[in-house]
Amino acid sequence: MLCRVAMLDLPPGRRPLSPGSRAGLGAAVMLLTAVSAVELLDGKNADFVGLFAAVPFLAAVFAFWQTVLVVGVVATIVGMVFVAAAGPLTVAGGVNILGIMLATGIASAVATIRQRQAARIVELQRLAAVAQQAVLRPVGPQVGALAVAGRYISATAAADIGGDLYEALDTPYGVRIIIGDVRGKGLDAVRLASIVLGSYRHVAYERADLKAMVTDLDRAVARSVGDEDFVTAALVEERGGTLTIVNCGHPAPLLLRRGKVIPLEPPAPAPPLGFMPEVKARVERLEPGDRLLLFTDGLGEARRDGEFFPTADRAWRLLGHGTVGDGLASLETALVDWVHGRLEDDIALVLLEYAGPDDGATVPMPSWEVGAAGS
Image (cartoon, rainbow, N blue to C red; front, side, top):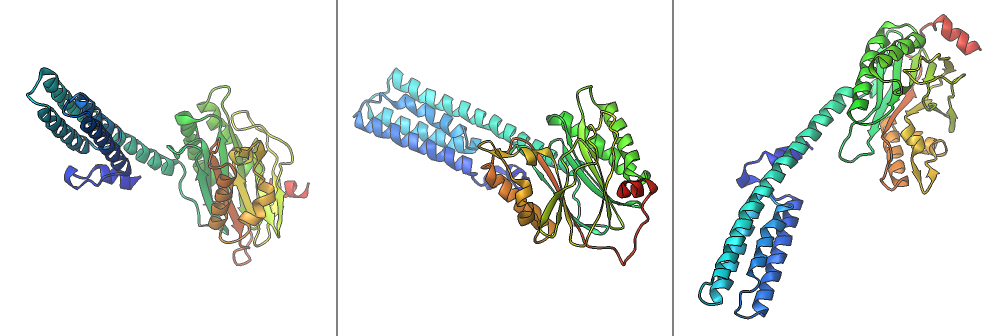
């Protein structure tokens, strides 16, 4: 994207032809050649000279205005040659030449406007990418005792930003991760995702347990949305080898352990953020080498010919080897291939790997987590 912006900023004399500009030039030359051939077959009469006016317009669809101007001048000269070869200048011949010149000027103006609009779109895409980086900051590769990788797969080729969110933080209470999905699309979804992440980045360092964090996040969402808007989310905490998960209407994470894929369903269902969820924690003891996949519902809803992507069946083969970054890359490749490159929803992915306790140190579990683990 940045290369494209730089290309548009080059001086006209140094600007290389883009593939679209070359295509426009090629189409214009073909039309110029075709009209010239028809004129030659017509004999000395200049009956089809007026068709040369279409040549610069065809170039203007793709080419830079400088290319359009050159093509128009060439078309004008060729038209003048055919008019001169037909004999003394007639009113019809003069009108045709003036028409080609006028078409060249109009087509050059159209190409200029199109170039400016294209440059503005590229700039907006660049700003969207910057906004995406501000909302979804890069995670990993190492957060506390966890190797972490995150990936955002956009369903829209023209925009890499949406309402899916994730974050991983190393806090005094352990490594904490959130993954979420805002109901809806567009700028409103991006705004709400930024609100959730901004609140999370604050409360993750302030609250000693995940239930209190859920309460704070729920209030932040409720203050910012309408009655029908909400955010599904899963919050994960790794503390001294103990994994704690609270789930607010979000797809259950998948635990990958020794070739098996275990969905970590919550002890009891809870509604999304914005609907005052009452969450119950699920607690698991991690083993070195365990991996955990967090994802948004775009992954579960990806389908081909009515058949959903078999996430659980393929998870170990795709995610259980190499680095966590390699695993997410393999999953994305398999997913895009499954849907033939046509995703219906954005997807956020986070893959964690537990390397083992840090020098054997453990952090005591809070009392509410101890009760959850023993229940």
